[in-house]
Image (cartoon, rainbow, N blue to C red):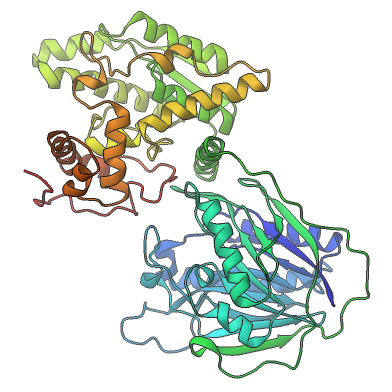
Length: 582
């Protein structure tokens, strides 16, 4: 059978940085060529970054993408790389007049094949996702072809991300066309446990397509999304041939033996897709001894996977937005301690600045825990007491109760933003998903910041990740970054004497279980009570969630790790009088 050395470039890109993204494509194409690759591929919308959102509606941006693609093809040839076919994702537009209801200008989430200085084939995503964080029906029109390229005597069918996630379309069309390889380029965001779902999906699609299937995924981060890589190649029976590491850039190179191409396929196949076939090279490469297997990277366990996603998401947000350092309010509690550990791993402790801001209600052990965290991690710590500011406000306003408590949080938020403005650090908000869900945060206080690293992490998972991080450090012979006392002491905002979170909230394991059903799975009151939870507790929790929407809308973005994070995943009106319970 013909042989083909396939190169899958699992790399990051930045939205809008078209020149930098093109430079990365040239760099990795050169690497592929030096390794003797016969076909190189890059992720979905690699040239523009993903997702581009409303940039897709700007004709200037679409034209910049199209021009950059043409320039890239010419540059690859000029630098001696033109003989290597390159598959790359970019933003295109349809040449057809848009039909009623289609986006203006008819943008397309597209892929292209570059060869010998030319764009020899263009194609667009056939299935457009319109769920979760995806709004592709808003932006794009679908492709209506099955693109197939013949490379060294092998027919390779091409697809883009959702073309594999939905039934029908290009997968069965690949079988009908008799292709020997199905290559899908993807920018599929990370979610917990998605690696298992993804593997089963690729296996199933390979069996349906009747050929070896390569799933190339993006890595890195974009705003609240993180991409974990985990590119996969399986044979026609679903057996794993190669699997790339998670959260790691690199090139997967593997030698494949694939069926020889038959007569050039043509016509219309499944779902009305028209085959568009381009022959790049008819003759198989001279037989050689296969050397590259691609390897199968060891899977991360569940806690390490989530922690790696949080580190990757924070690093991408900070670096891509031009910051060098971050600022965190350190209370000695578990949330700020975990955020600090993530920040140190993402950016280096020398670029992490912490501020302890005690009030008269702050316990000695909390101040000591913050100092111990700084000692263990090596981050920069200073102490700024809010007591003088607090006294001045109280003398002027005479606040009591909740207003007095929230004043302390707002003074801390103002202090952090003042230091940020003065010194240029990016402020991190330490709130977790449990607190955001029930409104257990102070607007313009502990919610201030540009990014919330654990925004999509329930409190019970916060504890679990902290324990995992300390255990991982101990196993490597390092000092565990998070003080044991921060993990074991009862959570408290310390805004009044002897305050603990459970004064006003259920125990976190119970709260998080209710929230997972209501927030993540859209289960109603009756279903949650039927699952065994106290009816009065469920009613109170759901009321807290429903009345806190206005707070969540004002919280900064943060790394999404669940199937339904607060943000684009979950879109509820702020003004909303519907209640699951009264």
